[in-house]
Image (cartoon, rainbow, N blue to C red; front, side, top):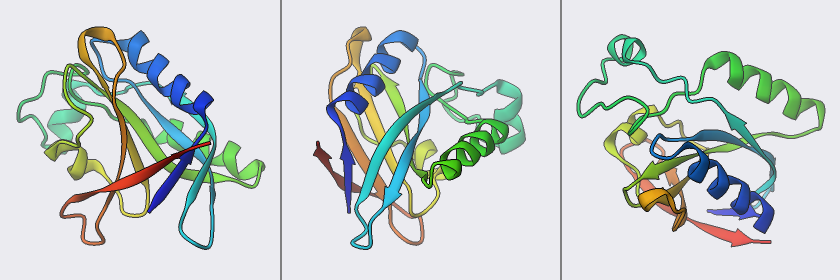
Length: 154
């Protein structure tokens, strides 16, 4: 499991995390999937964090909930539009990213609950507003745990 990101893509993700601190940022990773399973990211798409308490109630995910300070949701309309634009270029969504303000770049129980198999999940740690470690994860097939994914910088 390998995710290829350009230095520019990494800079864009980190900048988004810095700009939204102390709230979580989120977005999509658009690119291609090679036969080997390696994902190549061609574009980082910033998306609004649509998380609200009402959404949390609907999804039954209120445990340790502090709104956008520690949660994110991508609106299905934004997701659909992003996928539509990606397909017009012959690409698709290969993963997602979000920030962890004042927490490590390690997925939470919540992150696992909202993840889907087959996608890369990039997390950037943003301690005290300064982007730091960036790591990628992918779920195992039954979605019981996240497995680390190699980030190949291009």
